[in-house]
Image (cartoon, rainbow, N blue to C red; front, side, top):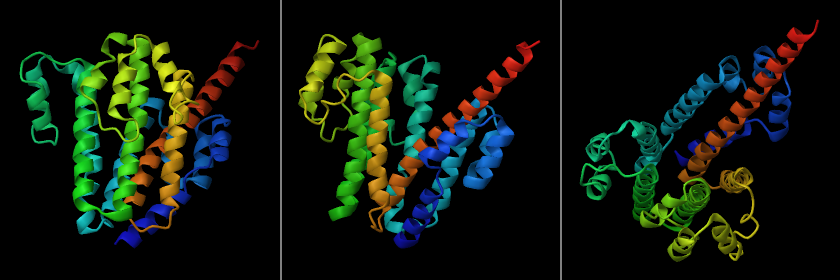
Length: 304
């Protein structure tokens, strides 16, 4: 089943739009042109062209869930527990999306009943006081990552285990840094929350992360980050460029695993992670095409 799963994944990966095709798509005008382009180059995504921006993102979420379910048929019985990473991550995102509607700690605890987050939230939130958003997100992410890493350690040995740990760890490090810099820039009073509820780290060790969190200003945090050879090139990038570089590095890692020639569940995991980024890029290209159409129509109406 692993060989069939990996063959299916690599076939789907090969049908994703290239950077040049995304650029060509974003230069088009109108949903009809975009739909025709996608029919020729990525027919499985052609239906996205006709939707508006908000609906398109919902369709992308549904498309990713459909891919998870269709690939699940090829997942071997021993890999089934790991394959639940996707529903667990979807639950985490649902909880964070609903979090602004919670009024008490009891609301938060109730929302996690029956999930992998129930025990962690019940222990950390024992009163009716609702943690701030950053603390709640860090708590849920920490639980998710530790749960999955324990499962990997228990089930996988050798190359499979190392690849899965690296895929989870690299993503955790980059998300931790991105969140820390965002908090230091916009919500400095909440920045140390991430150190209190430190999510799983890989090569960004706990001591370094605590020092980055304790720095008085975002400039001090960036200066300290610049002393680390692995992060020196990123330390002083503006937040949007920092996020883009982090995404580029992660997708490069996913691509390496997909093309590794291995027959492992890590290949399917890397594909689904990359597919989410690919769908986001596709939405951005379609938004650009729609904006170009709007500007063209506005210009036509303004001419005498």
